[in-house]
Structures are given as C-alpha cells and as structure tokens.
Image 1 (cartoon, helix red, strand yellow):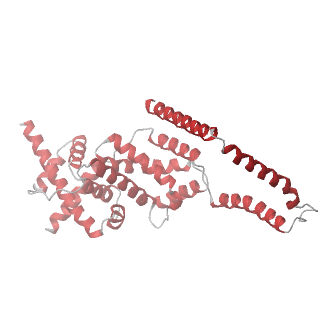
Image 2: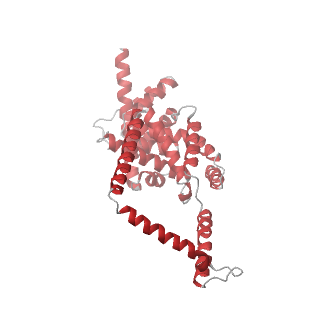
Length: 190
Length: 133
C-alpha cells in the first residue's frame, strides 16, 4: 500500500506536478530525520543531511529504477550522506567490541517496566545514543521501519549475514547500555 | 540460549517502539519544498523531447542552406544562396584584412593587455565583495 502511494506521487512529480513531492517528504521525513540524527547525534546536522537527501532524491528521481522501494533508495542516500560526513569529521564510525559483561535481561526488563513511559523513552534514547552509528542504523531500520535484513543490507551495502551479526550485537549492546543507565539511576537515588 | 535470544529480540522490539521516531522542525517540508522550487528555477528540467526540438531547430535550417549552397541555389523560387552571400563574404574578407593590419600596430597589444588587466581587477573586487558579504 505504502509502495503504491509512493509510486503514485513519484509518477505525478515526473509528470511535472512538483508539489506532489511535498507528500513524499511528509511521508518519509520522520524516518529520514531519525536515521540521520541517530547516526550523526546532532540535531542541526541531521536536519541538514535530511534536507540534502530529499533534494538529492528529487534531482535523481528520473534515475530511480523502481526495482526497490522509494524508501529503501532514500534511506541509502541518507546513509551515504551521513557516512561521508562522519568520515570528514573523523567521528567514531565503527562498532565497538562486544560488551564484556551482560546484565541479566530479566532484571533490565523488570526495571524498565517499573518506570514511567516518559522515563523509559528517555533512557532508551540515551542508550541508543551510546551505540555506534551502524548499530543504531540496523536497529532503527529493523525494528522501527520493519525492513527485512536483505533491504537493510541494500541500504548499508553490507552482506545479509553481516547485518544479522550487527543486529545481534546491537541488541546486546542496547541491553547492556540500558542496564548501565538504570544502575546509575538507582545509585543516584540511593 | 535461543530462548534468551528470543527474549532479547522481543524486548528490543518493545524498547525500540517505545523510543519513537525523532521529529524534524515543523517547517521542514516547507523548507525542502522551497529548495526544490529554487532548484527547479536554477535548472529547468531538460527533457529528451526538448533536446530533440533544439537539435531539429538548428539542423533543419543548416541542412536546407547547405543543400541550397551546394546546388548553387534555385531551391526556393529562384533564390540563389551563393549569389546572395557573395557581398557578405566579400565584406567579411575586408573586415578580416583590416583587422589584421590594425592588429600589427604597436598600441593594439598594449590596449588588449590593459583591458585584460581591468577585467581581472574587476573580478578581484567582485570576489572580495562576495567574501565580505
């Protein structure tokens, strides 16, 4: 359904109705911005990259072959723009090693459930910020856009097995980060 | 081990959905569309059809005049391009000859150098103004 809607607006833009592009921007802006923000960890830079990505997609819309979804193509543009920014600024772009110790999953889960919704959201976002950009990307695409591993591999130009490994590590690291944050919170309360 | 992985997957899904998506500024779409409009004005879409029209507009008259010139005219009701063009060709030769004589005068290279220097100076001023803006 989403794909059909995207294709409808793309067709309208290609036929000369440029205002239809606003509909495509509206439909994808949150995910594009989230991806850019989680990779760059900076709001201004993320807005800039998100805008650049939409402009680049608009300029190359004729070249979009439609063998993949518009969103997949757009996310790939965002991902590449972010990676080139990260390379220029020499920020950390590779995943860290696996965490040495892993807190008990049930403990973390129980503690998270006992929190208010706003606090839970705050801590999860904080934990996500501490992950490497590629881990945040795979988590966001897999769990928040429900993309299959093959499409994530297409966006990130990794192999499917590499994406699966990254997903597994990212889950573990998110869990470890949440455990640490919750522990610090408890200590600060005592 | 597998059960633990499944729980990890289940919890991650729950946590990620609770984290929600980040939102850009409320005027984000408006700003993107402004830039799209600006881009459209700077580089109007050149469709393949347009390119063919331009090529046809140039090639058809060229082909016509070429054919007419080679045939010695007579294509359009007694019109002879070769005869019609003779005075212009003669004038062109005269202008070129005069220009060659004038260029040999010693002041001409100096004047050209002065013009080039002025143009370079002008560019320099424009560039410094744009940096200061």
